[in-house]
Image (cartoon, rainbow, N blue to C red; front, side):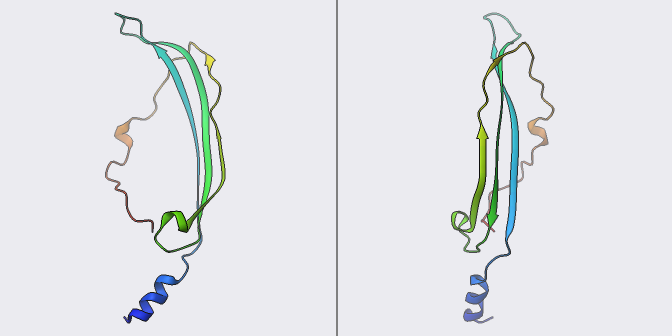
Length: 104
C-alpha cells in the first residue's frame, strides 16, 4: 500500500461512537472499638456519577478524539444508620487480564 493511501486512510474520520456510564455507590462510615472484632455502622451516604462520551476523531489521541457531555455527579449527604454494608461482588469477579491500550 502506498504511503499516500495510508495517510488518507489514517486521516479518514472514525465512525461516531457513543459510550455512557451511570454508576451508583453507597459508602459507609464504620467504627471498630478497641479490642472488638465487629465494626459498628455510624453513617452512610449514597452517591453517583454519570456521563456520555462521543468519539468523533481518529487521531489516536484520546483527549482529541473523544468529547465528554452531560457529566453529572452528586456526592450525597451522610445520614446516621445502623445498616451494615453488604457486598454482592468481590474483586474475584473483575477482569484482571484487561490491560490499558491505545485509544482505538
